[in-house]
Length: 151
Picture 1 (cartoon, helix red, strand yellow):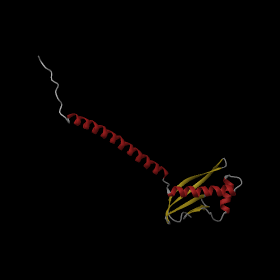
Picture 2 (picture 1 turned 30 degrees about the vertical axis):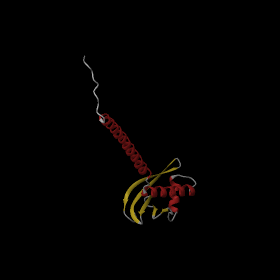
Picture 3 (picture 1 turned 180 degrees about the horizontal axis):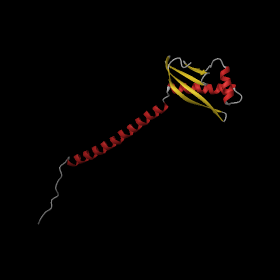
Picture 4 (picture 1 turned 120 degrees about the vertical axis):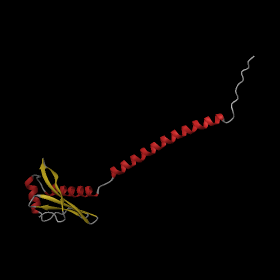
């Protein structure tokens, strides 16, 4: 009769299949690992950019906070007239941070902040102030003044 012989597989042929499947799995795992590394690097860069402190913003916040504290300490009733009288009566503002400082301009009833970064003049910003409900709000009018400000 007919005999059905089992075909003998060559040795090493199965080993090639196993090697191919393992290589494919390893490539997939490396792809996932690379994606996780890219996600981590992106998160670290985002965190670094969020935590980064702008020198100009830091100086602005410090100067305006000091000005605010000075007003609230020395003026009993916070309204337009009393604050204006306080600034007119002062000969010079003492608010300084590093080389930057605030200057009060009596003619315009405004503040000029002159920024110095690395001991060099950077720019000047002119601020007006408004008082509402006993709180002082500052608004930037112009930010393009040269050294020396306005007279």
